[in-house]
Length: 252
Image (cartoon, one colour):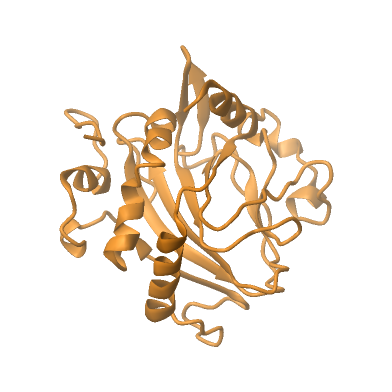
């Protein structure tokens, strides 16, 4: 990460990584998504009134598996989560226009103990964090991911106005980052965030890969490397269960 990128993340609690995926990669994964997770908003198992979601997209295809340690994002994972980061869980969120969603959530030092942001001796330390890959544009006013920049460092979470948390009032707190297909957005779960109704004519398409430091787990289940397509040694380390003693660095 550049000095400016570190400044941006520390200031906001999120950072947009531009042009991570090529058009070839975007088109391929969109095609895979259509084949494995058809656009059916009537399927009650995966549809919540215009929002489609399903887990373990990293196992869909080698192209999705490559997103686990895409070379354009691993420097950010190492910098923001430490050298022994691991993939905790993953899923996709696809949305049609008009889906109504819930309140803002997240924030530092919540009861589960895995959502935090700290700075010590020049190093940023994050708990559970999210790398979101965008396979469709999210333009100004389109909706989707929203957040309260800087809230990952708030000491007064309980004083956040209820109408803001309930998304009845946005200004001057809530923003919707603008992204293009192929971008990735990394944010700490210590950041207050949420999802706002989708307003674009095209479908919202995002893959969310959630990482944590190597000693932390949010998910109750762990990955099995045999479910993947000949994973590399590096991917196997990133997919491994949490541990402290003797854990090897995630990256080669």
